[in-house]
Amino acid sequence: MLSGRIFVNLNITGFQSRPLVKLGNSFKQLLSLENIELYHINLGELPNTIVNLKKLKSLRIRQTKLKSLSISLINELESIELLDLRFNQGLQLSESGIKKLEEKVGFFYLK
Image 1 (cartoon, helix red, strand yellow):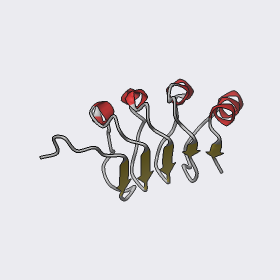
Image 2: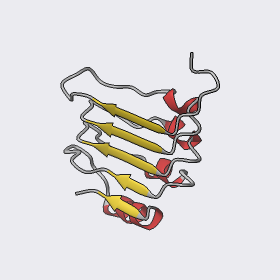
Image 3: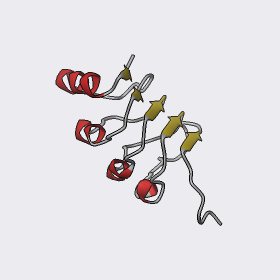
Image 4: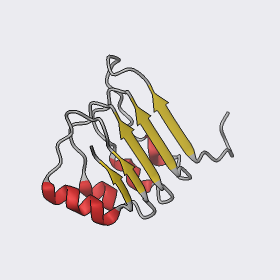
C-alpha cells in the first residue's frame, strides 16, 4: 500500500529488447516527482501527463527508442533544470526545437 507516501525519484532501467514501455497515465498520481531517470527501455513516447509534474527538476531519458519529443510538453514543466537526452539513436529534434530546449533548460544534453 502506497497511500500517504511521497515519491520524489523515479528510476526505470531495463533492456531495449523488452516490449514497448507505455507510461500512459503513470504521472497523474506521482505529483511530487522531482527526478525521473529512464534508461535502456523501449520507450515509444513521453506521456502528456508529464505536464502534471510541477516539481520535476531533472529528466534523464537515455538509451531508449524514443523517436520524438514534444517541445511544448517540456516547456510546460515549470521547474525543469536538467534534461538529458543522450544516446537516443532514433530521436529526431528540429534545430528550432533544440534551440527552444536550450533556452528553457539550464542543463541540456543531447549528444
